[in-house]
Amino acid sequence: MSILISYRALRKGGACADGLRAHVATLRRAGVAIPRRYSTAEIPLLTILDVLGLDAALAAASYVRGESPRLRLFATDCAEWALLRERAAGRESDPRSWTAVECARAYARGRATAEELVAAWDAAGAAARYAGAATWYAGDAAWAAAGYVAGYASWPFVVATVGDAERRWQAARLRLYLTDADLPPVGLEAA
Image 1 (cartoon, helix red, strand yellow):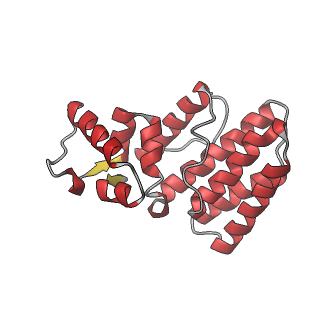
Image 2 (cartoon, helix red, strand yellow):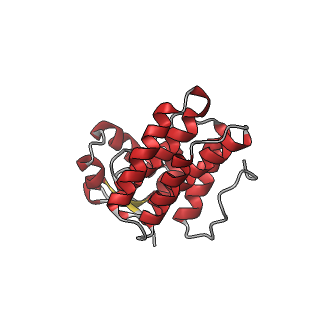
Image 3 (cartoon, helix red, strand yellow):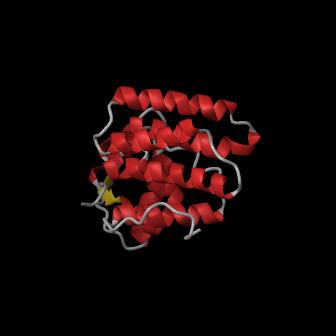
């Protein structure tokens, strides 16, 4: 099942009309069929990823997160990957960050309550605040992912602060979610 992004949802969520018009023009030049009255158009998120790139896809995804368990799970995968990268660098993240990821994943699958998620999000936020410079990335990633899954935060900073390897991993992982492919466990071997 394809995740569709509508112009109306983007505008309702606060997306810039001028930016959206520019994206529509780029999509049309790439051969994507968009009606003249594009305010009624629904575009697959996979098409946005393919044509406009990761940043545009994640920005668009932030407007449908509440409707898509797959996007919620993708956010938890990004946070888990950040935690694994910290571990690989010899920095073990606070256990509350790991708990937030697992709780966010359980919530996305309907196995945890909103109250449990809020508690895990708060705990991960406290861990992120007290982590110090060495582990801020992983702690904040877990906290942001839990908030994203709960609908409290816009797309986590995971996009803005990562390097090329992380961006490639995120794009590949998002593609797996958008194509209903089999999902391998989150791991660093693909980095």
